[in-house]
Image (cartoon, rainbow, N blue to C red; front, side, top):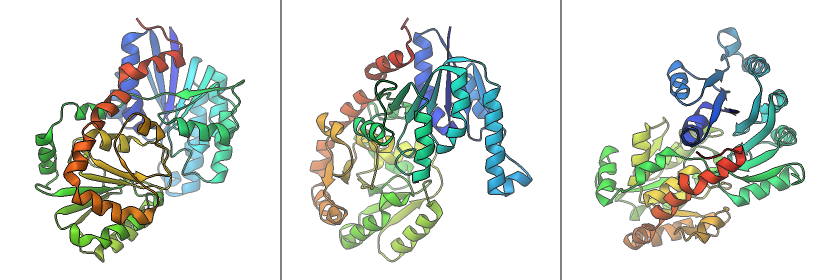
Length: 385
């Protein structure tokens, strides 16, 4: 029986990989194990063990080592390297989401596997310092295959940046199965109103601004645009999801200060929402503003499109593939155009929401298992039952 080892962070495994592996195991003869590189508790181990034959995880630093960041990192890496050396051999080792420090781990994994794969997700390439690209490139040089999760334009960037030669390393797209999209199947207008009720925002129109706290979201520019038209937003609640992201604490503080100087009815989300409330927020959102400096078709964007939100995004973002599929969304040329565009959307919101109704079917088909499973079978060289 073929043995495949998945290496990743816990939240990546649970959100993207677990649903995919569950389907693969139903239809083929294969053993999947996983190596979790982040903190994990026993309930998570039990959940993963329902799908993975073996769940390997590092002992997280504690006590004196935990209180000193550099010592914490070195103890953490020592534990990971020790764990990797103790692994048995596998047919395939597959890293999903490549943190730069994996460059210390990957050479050990490579010796344990016949074939070595890496899948980049976006922020493991876009939002990193130059020296982290050096670590990534060293690991890419070890790989037999390099994948991205969804965007062909993103794959081109990786190939160029890391000088990937097709004679030594193949590339492609592996779209993971995301169980969150099941929520949007068959949801109607009544569900939208119910979603707003769950959030305590009955009768309100909702604008969601970005999906994380990183500076690339351009929160300042969004708030500036909203402030220009705040007299037209009396029936709206403006929501800033800021639960995670680079420089999150600093950015949250800045955003709160800017919002306090306006008359906007706003919410800043600092704590992770339960999945039910997060999906309710997607469904309840009338307008989603997404003008990040860089992005690679994040799952949050796809969820808002599937939910029927009117998406306003930047023309500089690589969403040509969505355009080709006929997805309806609004693009602005530059950040300064946001206020005027937003005002036009508000004045004609009913029309835009109607045009967005077709997006759900397109996105659900795009991420469906039937559409994407062949790529996974080919990547792992599996035979479907």
